[in-house]
Length: 125
Length: 174
Image (tube, rainbow over all chains, first blue to last red; front, side, top):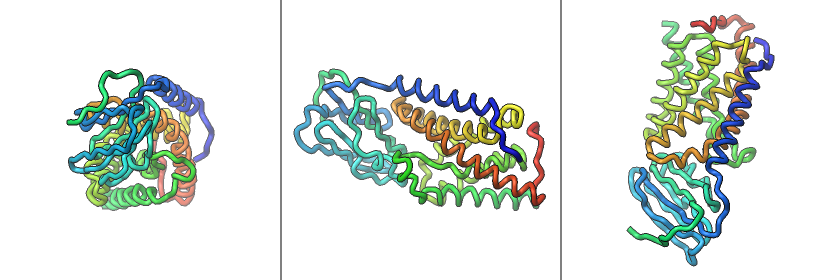
């Protein structure tokens, strides 16, 4: 078996890069003054937090097969503890910009930061 | 009998590879969570090149199932299956153009990309939320690198195996 780079390889590379760039711009959001973190679990909204208006430490726990804790401070939010096997969510660390996400797949929890204005501040359910 | 034992051996190998690769500190080079080397794809490619599609499918499905059973990731079974099966499909398709259009690097990169896409698509479906796609650009780009890496390893491995006559290259038409 000999290795010679073929034109198909280049095509694959270019296709993947283009797809990645297009997707990136699709999700890119301007860094805005108002930042709202939306926490959903299996597409049901658990919480909306105005990160830019947060003055103190804020935590929220979620339940389910893999419970965990999310903590938020001014301008940032993260998974602080999770009982899922892979811990990818916790390893993601703090997210700060609109458009950024942190996900715990086993738990079905997504944290997404949205920019722009929102009429709602903190909703406690 | 020989087929069963060969497939069984490869399933075991794939499981071990996917377990052990978690311990490689990829974080030092690529500080991104969720990025995997995907060493199990080496086994998949081996099956596609030398054992045929049915073996490849069997090995892929069984290694995902057994990995999930053994390493407590039943919840992630759906995601690993969707990634691995899509990768298998794409690599099989790319193999049709092997040596004329694609080299093993292209096939491997395509497999890596398809694996990530499959997993993200399943995640989007399961959580009924397209926000997860935001992570795909990162995964796609790192996939190009890991795909090249696994291709290099595979190439060296397959070359040695072919030289010692342990395997015979099969036509991609199978």
